[in-house]
Image (cartoon, rainbow, N blue to C red; front, side, top):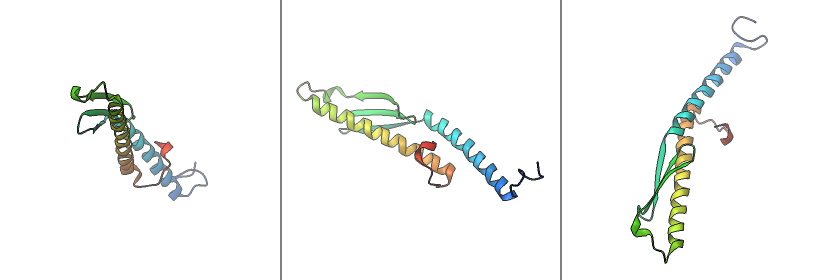
Length: 113
């Protein structure tokens, strides 16, 4: 191997490859960290509270008893759906924000992390 890099690869390319490898490691570390974090969303003025992880998994749903009305199940369903959707949106935003710190604002496709 040529001194300072891969054969036929200029020094700049070798440095760029090292930077990409470091960014990949950093992204993996951040991904593992955000998967352990949670976000909390609510609906109906706190009547429904949903906690989701950075993996976009629902960890808990809390329903205040006074919002449970057997004559209006649709309202309860709507509140739960709203809180779940908001928690997932918040989890995606958290992951995106943390990854953005690593990638320096590079416009990487969402499937990369």
